[in-house]
Image (cartoon, rainbow, N blue to C red; front, side, top):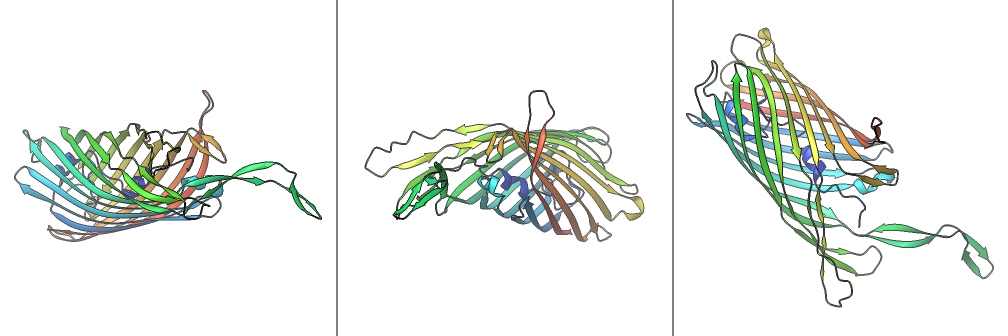
Length: 398
């Protein structure tokens, strides 16, 4: 089997390159709230759609692509009840340099998510409520290619004679990958959180989300055996993510609007261990594959500004760093963890008035590193790839 599997982790990174919000909603109405409680601070009813494309190139020039199409409706349901309804389809086709070919990934994820937030408490000036409690539900289907890898002996060099050839350079093992087959996995998530207006423009938030994936099964052919292969079951998993952060936000009319947010996502490691495979039996048996959800952390820094004399324009600078705490074994060596550093800049223009059209454009720059540490020494980065992308959104305010 492949030495290293990233499961579906980078699928989720790329899916929300327009950094999702945790404490307060973005001034760009097309960006989804990662924590449901933050949906309550939205000021308007909106319907929007967005398209994002991303291309990544490794050090050998291998090109990977990802794209995302999403739609969202956000609105006020009752006096103190707000909602976001979100749908997206993400496709990923990743190829890496020969030293890192075991990072390759090909997958598709169709997902829907619903956020509902209810407001409570005596509000401070400029808000309708003091704090919001939110719940969320998400459901999606992941289609991902899997394959088996067999190892065969190969002679390093031959000596040739009149009667034939003889291996004189010793033997080595080489890996041969079989034909991939698609597995289908259902993912569901339940979230709960609170967002609190502490003092004037200061907000804090905390929440959790439990994510569950189902088993996926496929018949995978051997790399060399004609018609040979096995039934494989890729086990599902369950884990609980934590979200927290703080935000400083001002959206009062007549003055410059701005929003700053610093937030974090922490996801623990979770392992669903496969049953031992008995290859001595003559009857057909399904071989289980262990599911490892690797521990990771995401740091989000958002800066958004709308000047007084251009109050229908918003300008952005969003930073996001994701780190997976997992040892990566590759042909280039063993690495302690992987980081993905992403920067996105752009603007959002809205038609002046209470209702009308709005358009957002965003440029994305990303670099990915494998990292090593040597005792107390500083981390050493080995760049795996760099990427660039664009996102366009169209929004209508009612």
